[in-house]
Amino acid sequence: MSPEDPSPAREHPGVQAYARHVNPTLVKLLGVYGYGRAFVRARDVWVWDHTGRRYLDALACFGAANLGHNHPRIIARLKRHLDEEHLNFVHVGPSVHQGALAARLVEDTGPSLDVALFSNSGAEAVEGGLKLARAATGRSGLAYCAGGYHGTTLGTLSILGTARMRRPFEPLLGGCVELPFGDLGALKKALEAKRLAAFIVDPGLCEMGALEPPAGYLAEAQALCTRYGTVLVLDEVQVGLGRTGTLFAYQQEGFVPDVLCLAKSLSGAVAPIACTVTGSALHARAFGSLDRYDAHFSTFGGNAFSCAAAHETLEVLRDEGLPERSRALGAWLLGALRARLDGHPLVRAVRGRGLFLAVELGPTDKGWVSRLAPGVVEGVARTMFGQWAAVRLLERGVLCQPASQHWNVLKVVPPLTLQRAEAETLVDAFAEVLGEYQGVGAVLKDVTGRLGRQFRAGWSF
Ligand SMILES: Cc1ncc(COP(=O)(O)O)c(C=O)c1O
Image 1 (cartoon, rainbow, N blue to C red):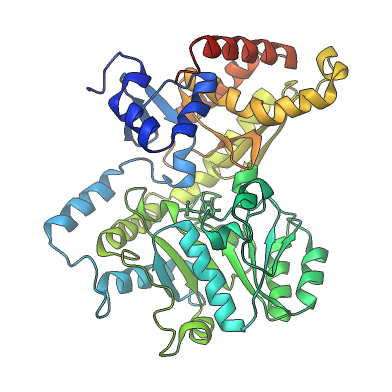
Image 2: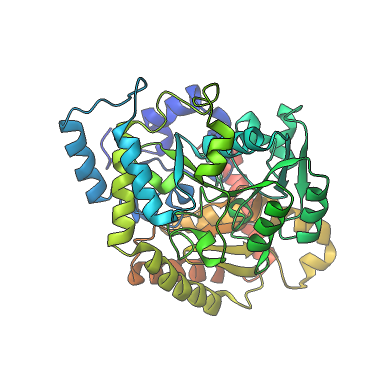
């Protein structure tokens, strides 16, 4: 099937095979609103569907495409790399590719984060941090924040701040304590018992929609952890690598974490690689003995191909000044979205920093529908508004998604290569789509009409 095929996406053989053999429920879920697209090509901030229509990407693969899609320097570097016939894994001796990448990372993280443990996914990077903390402290307790998201392995599910996703897999790891995000008093109380190996925290809760803690929280949390012998593990899997306006978000907070977790954009969105970065003293306490030197290992972790992609990614971020672009364009985008959306009866907040932004939806008016059944309206807003708005924006040519743990918040996290004109297109799309719906009644009318059409079509994708 050619990329310009005009037939419906549900007839695409890849979509049919996915629905049958990969994730039938996702396809059914998308059929509720009639998603109707298969994305087949991507370049920089643009993606194309199977009919050849292009969309502005405001999602960047959930923060994995900070460099945009198929950045020419990453592609050129990887083509060269494949031609050079490297040995992809060297499990019987030192990997020169991992060594070079780790040394390059230290240029960015600074000398106190000078040891890197490589793996393949964000969840593995976090698992590496938790294991390191347990091995170094001899304690088992883990504290995490409500609303935090760190992956879907059994270890990371144990510290996932949303009960819905944890429940089917319980019992998970014991000794895990949930704390309110941003609450230093609660953290201090949890630390005082001296049973916590690690406190895992994000600089901003990505999957709650760019939710940030009070100023000074992270630096004070690190100071408290140090005082009570607990390791602070900072999850920058989604916000790292320029997203919030500096290469790492902690660099805006006046502290250095004990452990830093990176993944997603580290490879320019073309190869899996993740990294748990720490200081050599802590690393030695955890893994510096003969019975533990291989305690965080996986076959493909830090393979030469992924290391080459990551190395080039760090160079591109620096050469193109993408963190600085994120800071400046993000400030403009935040201001422009606020200027167009503030006061809209369905917009509760526009927030974030850098290109780590979010629009929280929900009725703010006291119109007759909200007065009649406030609980129902709030429930509908929380479960349906985000996905409904994402589909409306898709129809308008913008790709975005609600936050996975807060469904009425739309993430606005485009590639950091976004240009000003493209940012203006994004603002126009949000303002025009929301401008058509001036109250809950208008949204409910549209939602019911769509559900009716989809029901008659058998919830067809
Ligand atoms: C903050 C954060 N940590 C960890 C992860 C897990 O990363 P992965 O999906 O690569 O396992 C994610 C993924 O979305 C994330 O956003």
